[in-house]
Length: 405
Image (cartoon, rainbow, N blue to C red; front, side, top):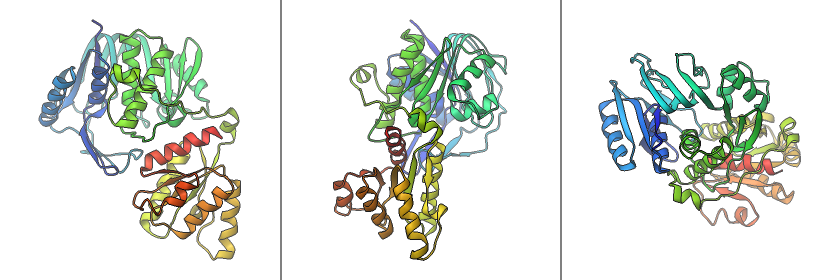
């Protein structure tokens, strides 16, 4: 029997919209993901007494083993939405005594409450910090074969540069971190895998809903299972991990091996090379006459920019003013844009007009609307707009559609 030992945080998690509350963290989620795929996993983590009790019940149900190291209070992560940066309570203090694990196969996530020194033959490492990612070997950890799995922000921070392509960044990290495999996750653009000096693009998969909290944990865990337990090549393991992650994003659940064998969502289009130099332009339509309206526009704009898209936002790029000063500038921007993301709640007259104008020009429109009736959405639905009632899904659908243009 091939066994994976795993270390990672176990945290209370709460999301405001959509409403959700669970105990997972990277360690708890990864253990569940591996066990659900039929893998054998032992989780070492820090936990308070309540978290330990919940975790042990889950371990019995899911079929993994858990060893806990006592702390006074497990951390709480609170998210406004699935792409928001969480508020963490209490303030993490790395005061717990580090523990050591020796294993044939190891998955190590960065920890907030303490540290784990790993001695492994094969190791998969996710630093879990875009600000101060810690190199795998810095605490004395060793591995004969090391796979780094990290997002673009973590990769740039670990390398100390943000001016490299993903492929060049992966090569630099492979050399500096002595890693056989480097995977850089890039959200809706998929991931880049470097192995044996060759880089490969791993697509994400288009899903009707996108639940992002913990999706990176599921990718890491699934990759480790397919690479270390199933013996797949790194490329095949990453492809399977991407599908398992899509299943999680669509359902908020964990795929069994049987479920994954029948789950084949469409692969998202990979961004065209020309679009790397000149990204698609998104027209961000929505009302901006109250703090709540301004907040959601700001959130949407920031998330789109993070994904590498260009954004025209009337409030940011034109501002308030009389019709003869602002209307033509907005209409010109709709002509220039590649697609539109519209915030539809409130049925703001200006936003509805902008949607109709964009569709008359045959521009793709994604409409995020939670609180309006089916009757009020009829014209948008009937004119070919893509409608969703979930903020994160709207952002991802915009990025996926932009990649097709």
